[in-house]
Structures are given as C-alpha cells and as structure tokens.
Length: 220
Image (cartoon, rainbow, N blue to C red; front, top):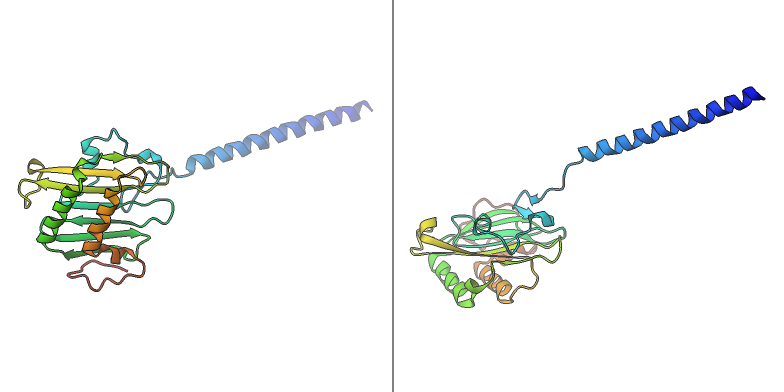
C-alpha cells in the first residue's frame, strides 16, 4: 500500500512538471511567432499614403512636412489617399507648362500613369479659380476623426514667374484633410478642377480614356 501511494505521488509530480513544461513551450512558441510577424506598415508603398494614425499630419505640421507631400514640379496638385475601404486612390499633378500627370493607384477605373497636355491657359485659369475661391485662406491641416480616413492633399504653388517654380521664386500653399470638418469650398474646388481636366473619366470604373490627348504610360 505504501509503495502504491509513493508511485501515485511520483506520477502526479511528473504530470505536473510535464504540464508546466508544455505550457512554457507553448508560450515561448507564441512569443517567437509574434516577434517574426511583420509590423503594420505606416505608409502605402504606391502613393505614400497613411494606413494608420501613426502617420497622420497634425495641426502642428511644419512647412517642410507639408512640402514633402507635393512634387516639386507641380503647380497644382491633388492627391486622394488610400483607406482601409474602397476609397479611390489617385493623384493629379498639373505643371506650369500645361502638362497633366494622372497616377491611379487603386479602386479607380484607370490604374497607372497617364500624361496629357491641357494647355498653359487652362493652368492659369485654374490657378486664378483657386485663389478667387479662398483656397489661400484655408487652414493647412484639417485633422482626421478616425484611423481609417483617407488623406487628401490639395496644393497650389505660386511664383513670381510661372515658368520658374524654384524654391526661391515660389510659395507653396498646401492643405491636408481627412474629409471631416472641412469647408465645403475645398471638395467642390477639387471636383471642379478634376472635371475640367477630365480626371473624373479616369477615376470612374466605367470611364473610357480614349478622348484624352497625348496619353503615354497608361495601363488599364
């Protein structure tokens, strides 16, 4: 009887030790998997777009931060960023010579880059329209209300000489917004610019692009 009790005791201790060892091994395995899991990206690699709040531009954004969002050669620039849903992600850069560069990233009818000439007179008209609308009086940043909001950048570069938009001769006015608490004039202004350039036909999934002149580098 005494030997039986001793054997049961040893068996119980062995079972406890084995359970403890297996539990420790399980947690160690989980920690290893967690350490190997890639971090959530803070940018969208195709268009430098925010996928989480870590990259949000705040009210305290510096001029250099805003400047980094706008191509140096763009006189007028509109960038619609990605979100966790089906937001159309694309950008439109309008150069001082009248050239327009459209880049479609995702959830748009035209994926890829299309270049065409809208004419320098159109650029001057759009620039004047942006100034008259009160664009220069807007805040530089209208913050996000949630982590999945798409970031939109609207910018206008004004220089003493429209053919020379170098840093010494131009001033950049950029507005970053996430679609909330934004003056109505801003989305309306973007819409008017894109319609006048025919960008809406590129964004719509049912749109045809054959009517746009001088197209290069396009993919459907």
